[in-house]
Each structure stands twice: as C-alpha cells, then as structure tokens.
Length: 243
Image 1 (tube, rainbow, N blue to C red):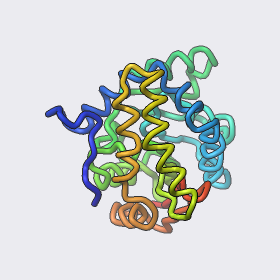
Image 2: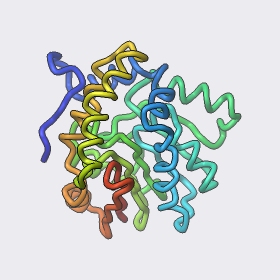
Image 3: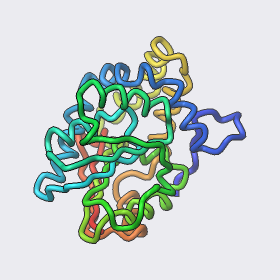
C-alpha cells in the first residue's frame, strides 16, 4: 500500500477532512484550472473512460468524487442513463455542480449529495455502474473505498476509474515530472487561493499505486476481470472491474 500523502502536512485533521477543505478552497477556480493545465486533454480522457460503459448501457450510475460534475455531465450526454447520482466530500464543489445542473435543467437526471467514498450512503447492489474520475488517489483508505464501491454495485455491474498514473518511457516521464512538479504548482499559485493544493497533486500521484498495483487492490475488493488501460504514454489510466 502507498504512503498516505495529505494536502496540508502540518495539520492534525484526517486526510479526508483535509481533502474536503482543499476542494472547498479551490472550488471556484477548479474547472478553469483543470482544463487550462491539461490543455483540454482531460475532456478526451473522460470520453474514453465513459466509452468503457457504452455496451453496458447502465440505467443508474453513481459518480464518486463527482466534484463539479463534469464527468457526470459527459456521461449523461454519451450514455443516456435514466439517472446519475454524484457524491463528494466537498460541499464547495457540489455547490458549483448544483449551479450547473440548474443552468442546464438536468435536475431530474443528475442529483448530487455529500458522501464519503468509504461509507457510501446507499444500500447494497443498487447501481448498474460506478465511476470515479481523478478521485481515488484522494481516498483516505483506498481498499475500503473500493470495497464500498463494489458493495453498492449490482452483480455484474461495472466500475470505471480514471486516474493519473506515472509514465515510464523517456522523454515523456521527464517532461511529465517537470510539468507536474514545477509548472502545475506555479500556475496553481497564480490562479488559486490555495497554492498547496497544486503541490499536493504531484505528490498524491507519485504516491498512488498505479497500473497492476491498483488492479490488485480492486481484485482484493472483490472485483473480477480487472483491466488497466494506459492513456497518453501512461500519463493517465483507465481501470475497469466487474462485480
């Protein structure tokens, strides 16, 4: 298991409390910085992850760590499910998501609520699919979070996880490390009132057990037919597993 990296290292609060505070702090600039720093490529990666559910045609989807809802909005467009429920530990991020839902008139299709990934506020075997985009590395207890995701899935349901990973090939690895460790914190400092959030990003990615290490944790949580699919030379990966 990876070492636990927290947003604010000198605080006594738990990782999940610190993550909630961090996202509350950056919620107003999050969408802009996300697209700006990834040069918009994050939108393409989201679409690739959602495509993993195309043939499954899930009717009810849970989006864990939904944030401001971008992944869920794209899933609604591409998959046409009956409903998506998004959960997040940051009220600040959910407030932005609610504004977007109201603006787009999607209240009947997409609802959001505060929820902890390790104690999801749902009965067992409810959802056809569960998605997590760029959220699992923020889980305080990765094993516990994945086990609870598996619990709320219907038998045969699919989990799709999109997360940053660590490229290994030269020169992508070197360019990626430079961008993540120097450029990202610098841009974050310029535009966000919480510069530490953008230093935490590369630290959390570096500590995250990606690739086969992550699929092994998924298997331990009860998932079968787990797969890992690297994107963009391994900058990002899509993980899937079936209950």
